[in-house]
Length: 143
Image (cartoon, rainbow, N blue to C red; front, side, top):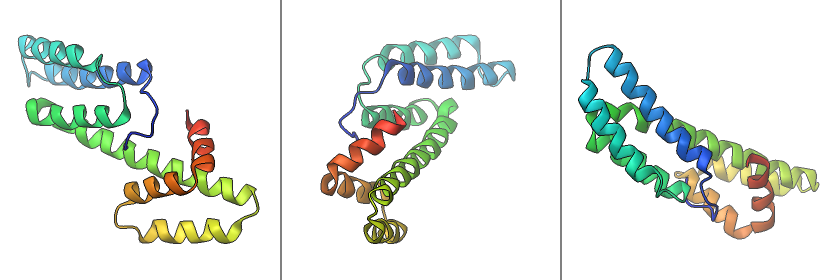
């Protein structure tokens, strides 16, 4: 997800590392990679994961992992699915904000436009700009 002006909390960094570790251990258990290769990959991830500060940097990092280490290609897919789920969650909470205010027409219009949007992430950024207060409330419910 685009950087929404929030810092990635340490738990998310830790979770990113744990997901990589889990994939590596599964591959080691099935003899797809050696312990030395696993150590090399985990050392690399450990070194760089601490510098991740935003969701956008986390995305760049996990996209890069699959390119740098073929053993980690499935990480990209896992986190992309999670990103889509987060976008859906923020969007749903934003629509709920308008519905709670009784602004059903706007909620309906936003839902229609989101369904027609070619890039939902870009449309969500537009909503963030146009409705910053409601957007922030939706984010707070997630965090």
